Image (cartoon, rainbow, N blue to C red; front, top):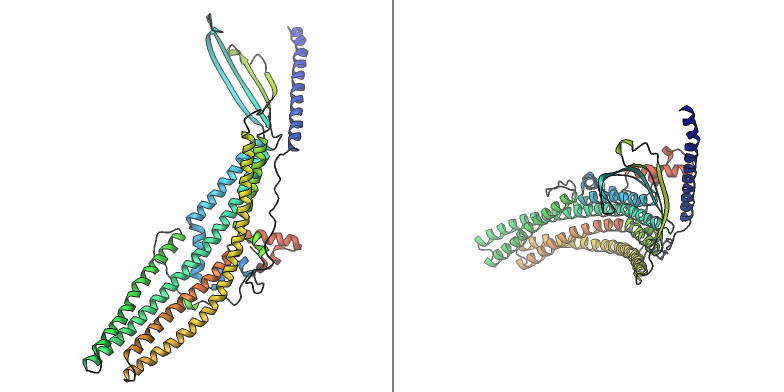
Length: 508
């Protein structure tokens, strides 16, 4: 028995060695095929769109753009505004949705990347039958098996690599999309906040004017009672008081609407917003940040997002082209089988290996049209990118001219308000002295009231003009992690410790 066992041992070893050699051969072919596939990738490679921006903005003044790279809202020195912005960046629902989209895009990238590797699985089967080829048998036939499977579609034409390239571009686009929402959110919070202050300021103006006109009405009523004036003066005074009274609920309504809008931006239920400073307490910035147009291409997240969308669509052309060619797959199986479950593991391993080629032959031009569709979609993405750049330049130039003209308008409104206030005061004294009619008083009061309201609104529009410019230039939120990362990058470039980097030199 011992000699018989030794006699069969070399035979079993030789079969095992032969099987291993074959497996190594197929594995080598698979590796060579993978290397060959890596060298071939159909479809156009991505080329960055040309920079066609002008040298300067049309209404640019001097180059002072450092503030837009940082937390520009801090120039207003308002802790309330700072708190509102930080709360919105933490709780705003649209921003949370954008963060979720990043995670979705990251999962999609990994999902597509998995197609590049081989698929390894398992399979098992068990069956009992009393017929063979449709012929009934006297006894049952049992069959049992278990095996591991191997399938690898070689990325010979770059189909999976192009799909992976598209998924990666969409992941980057989701990051830029979130940043675009952050910048828009910061601007919207600041704009709504200053609108709220404007409405509160105009409400205060209306209430003060109402108190003054009520006092004037009482004086005129007393003069009428004494027979010094006519009833028409009393009626005119009542009309002026009513005009002011009408404006008060209007501004109260606008205040409530602004508070509700701001609350929703903060991710909260509509509620009141506590403010400390008055609108005119904010100083108008001395300089206008503008920079150069080409910086928008690297700063504005919506432009960067649009470029990544174009890159993703460009990669899909390669996916469509690869579908016109045959797919090449390697398959393998290693397992055991038996007609008796009790000796399933006693019969040794069975294996198989093979390759397949499957491809379209004649589909009436369907695959070619698929490529044409993706090419046109890529062309649309490129045009969308170019349009995004044009709109960015439009927003910056419009914001620059808006600030410049609003400053001129504010100076004129200030002069108008001072003159109207002085004229209103003088006309009241002239009327009480019997020098002039009440019509002069009415006209001067009207002009004073309108001038003061116009000045407050103009002041708010100018402050929001700067906010629009910061948004148009792509300035905005910088997280502590981003500041630290950029500080480390500058430290490596300058070959100095991180703590020696000037924090003011860290740009968005």
